[in-house]
Image (cartoon, rainbow, N blue to C red):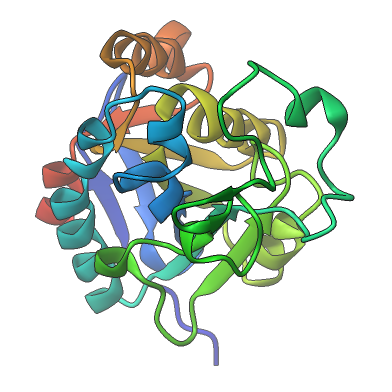
Length: 225
């Protein structure tokens, strides 16, 4: 006999978010050493990685609560094949950074699967039974099979955390919206190297009655769990 979790109602913007834990996945996007820790790819681009590192404690607390509730967890990593065959020139050459994708940095080759810098930060490391997706693009649905994995588990709702808000997080939320998922972004569990970009993204997501999805602080999720 199939059992389902009770429906939960979570305070959110632009209006209440209804979901069932058994039909919801938490998607934590690209909380990788190369983006979060000093010496990685993010810092090589001239960014202040302390901004991203600051969301780790709230994300860890939220992740622990979601695990206790028995919810599905998906971790994504932006990581390319060692031969970079899945990295188009338009991405490889963008911005003329000091270190490019595939170059050797302080944490190994930049954004290459299996390298130390591509790993998720220790505080949020996956545990057995959680899905880990290496994605070649900004969106987690592109060239990954994520949609099929979620549908096979009966997932209809997605909770989002991770970095960066305006790039990989927003791209994935828009992909999810186009595929029929109801997505909510946890506001204090996402961040950008540019705070104004985060603020604008949150406003865009919940504009027009939730055109992309919902947003809420993680405290609202903890309250209903």
